[in-house]
Structures are given as structure tokens and as C-alpha cells.
Length: 305
Length: 333
Image (cartoon, rainbow over all chains, first blue to last red; front, side):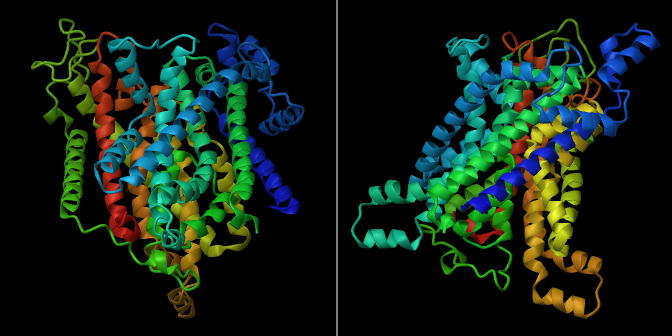
């Protein structure tokens, strides 16, 4: 990718982020309920509510609110929480490490499980190990993520007593990471398997066989490597799934993190916090996709030319 | 959509890589079905891909097994549909029936799935929850696919600035992870069954739009479209009578698999407290209710979860079977 195309790609990513900000702003501020009434409390008088409304700035026209929001955003200010009056950026920054740890470990589990099961499945295509893995993938793909989490809790905590459910220790991370990673491993597994099965029928495999290379070397050294290239693209997509999954998993396991903050803020109609959290997720998503595009040009020579 | 995966990828990297992973599986399935549509001139498939791969011997037992699975899926669907239509015939108790003498009882002859913390029969709750869960799946897909397909066909057929505008809009739409978008919408609209359906369907629109746009672009330049236009057919008539029928394969596959993801998304919203409420509990809400009694009553969370999974597995199996019928390449796998 040359500099021109890179700049173009970067610009369009910025445009997408800007659009996402606008979209989320419009959706959330279209809320029928008045956050001022919620913040002021149930017994507040009409004057108090009006004063709170002025304080929050929600009495202004939507266009004005949007422009001021954008203005603040440009200087890195995500606004203040309606409820605690704490800056949203600070609140999210405090929660970010927990969510980053969870999603990165979840991603590692997903890649590890997805690639190894995908390879195993392709290696034994059509025979029982393949069918077993395919059935497992179908089940994982058809389960609500939080139910998988609940089943893991039932098995490993309640019945076997091996792992804690709550807490901030390393052991308490195992179940949430598994719940998150296993669900996301399914698309990786399917892509690796299908990619390898497609690859085995490419002409270059015939060439490799003709020059006398062993089946193992062909399978792992060439076909697997080629099948992993499209899987990198999938990683950008997987991030969206991980971020959505983090909301569920953090709520289920009562963990710290951006997802849990979002859910709490929704309950309190704390719009700036919800808005900030979704914005952070969208930016992470767009940035990872941009990185995937860039890395793709490094991995796949066909794209470079 | 060129037939080979290696040719398709650079396009995916460009701008359409923005989708959730679950959706992505669906999209890939649909794209695969799409490539089964007779190749358009200019989209000549590579010979190695055009010829269905020789499988290692046509093993009949596997074919029988897959037929049996489809039959089983249809049976599950029929039962869920019966629960949704006439729950009173199938459930021994009303879901509102609370029995203080039968609180948190383990599954047994009196209560097949046990009872919950209010002494309600879990089996009856599951039977009465089927309507909500099935409705969320089917209605969200009907709305989402209708709007998405229309937008996609319009963009692909019209081309030019309208196409560019609509595709940038879908880029933005997809930059917000779909569950988060559904959460934002559900928050704005308030928790209810209708709003859950609206939130999930709106979040799914861009996926349909993107696939259908590619389809419409491929079909647009074909001879029969030219012929129809030369014969004086209006744009609407061409879209409805010529382009849409050619895109039915990927739409059917996407919609079937989409029902599964919509049901899962609906249960996630219920779990987060943004879905249906107490009056009309769906299966996701039942799971949330049972969560507090996890350590003492495994049955309150296990059976509603099994119901969701059984339904979604069936729908996904049917979707896969449909794809195999419509896509010879997938069948060879």
C-alpha cells in the first residue's frame, strides 16, 4: 500500500468514526425520557428540574448540543457523567485496562482454540474428529454467550469447585476469558478449516507433491500458512464480537470494565457515559480494522503489487 | 463476486471488513450461496473452483445423517411453533401460577423442569416463552432483511453517488459493534418486545445491504436486464421482476441464519435488562431470573438455555442445509 492509498484509507476511517459519533449521539439523544428528572430525583420541584436541565445543558436545541459535544470531543473531552459529575474520559480510562485484559486474553483463547481445532478438523475432513468439531462449533455458535458463561460457572465453580466466579485475581479471570474466547473461536475455526480444504485443491499443492515434499510439510508448511492469511482479516471482525461479548461477560461475572459501566449507565440514563463507552468501542473497532488492512499488505504479496 | 476466495479477499479488506464475527459467518455463507448463481459474463469463475470438488467417495451414511438432522431440526421447529401458537395446550400450568408450597423444586414427575423461586413451573414458563423468542427472531429478520435488501438492491442497481452514499452509511452503521448498536437503540426506545425487535432489525440492516449490493451489481449488467430495459420496463419493474429473483439464494440463506442470530441477540438484550419485561418473559429473561439461584437450582437456568440453543441449532442446521442445496461448492466440503 503506497502513501497515497494509506492516507485515503486513514481519512475514510476518520470519516467512519465521525459518522459513528453522530449516529450514536442521535440515537441516544432521541430518548423520550428526560434525564434531568431522573438526576433531580423523584420529589424534585419543577424549578429544580429546570435548573438541573440547564446545568446538564439538555434544555438547548439538539443541534446546539451536538455542536458543543463535537467541540468538546475535538479536545478529548467526552463530557461529564450526569449522575456522578465525574469526567467520562477519566471514568472510562480507569475501566479500560480491565476490559483490555479481558478482550485480549479472550482473543488469544479464540485464536488458539480456533486455529488448532480448525487444523484438526481439516486434517481429518469428513471423518469423526471433523464431525465432532463441527458439531461443537455449531453448538457454540448457537448458544447465548452468557448461557455458556453460566454453564461454565455451574461446572467449574458450583459442581467441581475448581475456579472462583468473582474477584479480581488471575484465577477469577479464567472463566470469563473462556466464555468470551470460546464463542469467538467459532468463525476462526470455520475459516481455517474451509481455507485449508480449499487450499489442498490448489495447483501449487500438486506441484509440491510432484517435487516430492512430504504430506506433513505440505499441510503445515504451505497450506496452513496460506489459510492463515484470510484469518488475519477475520481478526478485525472478531474485535467487534469481543467488544460486544465483553458487555455480557462483565455483567455476568460482575467484573470491572467498560461493558459493565455501560450497562450501569444505561440503567441510570447517564447518556454521556453510554455515549463515551460506545465511542471508545467504535474507535477500537475501526483502529483494529485499519491495522488489519495494513498488516495484510505485509503478509500477502498479492495485495502489495 | 468472483468465485475464488483469494480473488474475493482484497475487496473484503477494503471497506467491508466491518461486521461482527457472528454476522460474518452468515455473510460468508450468503456470499458462498451468491457465488452459486450462474456466473455472469465478466465474472468468469476459475476452473478449479467451478467444478465441484470430488469428495473422497460418495458416502451414503453421511448423506442420510444430514437428512436425519434436517428432519430433527424441522421437528424442533414444529414443536416450538406449536408452543408459540397454543401454549395453553402444551403447558400443564399457567406461567403466572405461583405455588408457595413448591418453591425451587428439582425436576421430577410433578415438574419436569423443576420450579423457580416463585414456585412457577419452569416447563410451563419455557413453553409460554416460545412465542416471544420466536417472534423476536422471525420479525427482526423480516424487517431487517426487507429494509436491507431494498437498500442493497437500490445501491447496487443505481450505482454512482447513491451507491457511494449508501455504502458509506453502512460503513458507519457497521463501525458500531452490532450488539452495542442494539443496546443504544433499545435504551433510546425503552425495554419492550416491539422495541427489542426494532433494535435488532435496525442493527442487522447493513449486512443484508452489503451482500445484496454486490449481487445487484453482478446482475445489473447481464443481457436479460438490458433486454428488459430495451423493452421499456421501469426501474422498479426490473428490480422486482429481474434482479430480486436472481438474488433469492443468498437472501434465503442469510435470512434463515439471521433468525438464529436475532434470537441470540434478543436473549442478550433481555439478559442486560433492555429487552422484554416481566409480563411477557422470553427465554433470555427466564435465564436472567434464574441467575440469582444458580448455586441452589441449576434447572432454572439450564432448561431455558437449552430451549434457546435447541431452537438456534435447528435454525442454523436448516440454514446450512439450504446453503448446501443452493451452493454446490459448499456441498462438496
